[in-house]
Length: 259
Image 1 (cartoon, helix red, strand yellow):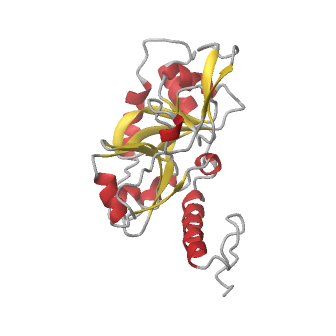
Image 2 (cartoon, helix red, strand yellow):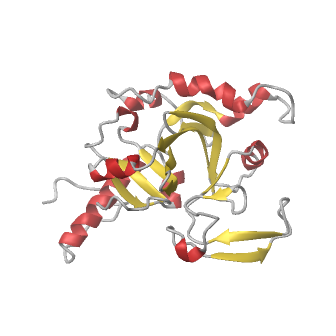
């Protein structure tokens, strides 16, 4: 594993060699990775609250008000659903029914409510450094201007190809997305962060498997995504070693009885 690997727009899949119990069996979507550090969110750890319930607590009419800030209301949630329980970090998911607007726990660092979604133009594209040209973009995305008069934030917008998700923390955006039945959506509170060369060191020690992020995994069932991505990485390694041997697809799963 090269320590210079740029993980922007990729999944980090926790390996058995990762010693940080906060991330046991976690999948982290890396939104930015630069020489200054890395920032991402865990996508497969559902918390105990729903976005609709939090909005109702802060403002029953869903209009602008002087009610409590959403991130303050969720601070206790992130603490109580401790990510640091190494014995069973998924304990908070026991008997938890997952709803479409469930709020996920993005990591051990306190932060605002974020929304990962698939509606282009709302917030920022994950895995794209807007300040750089497309030729330098580690996600391999391309940019183009197009007319979009229906969007309330402008008659022109930029569309990125191959972007696994968009991210926003703007409260107006969060409320707008909550009303969009056509959106793939995941609310997240808290985040995962690494300082300069910290993630590179963990990668070198074998703490993470790395694979490009994809929309289906971000918004799919959180109970299955870790196993699915571990299988994907394992198959990629085996295909490199034995390119002529066929492997089952991710959907087929793994049958230990087949040898």
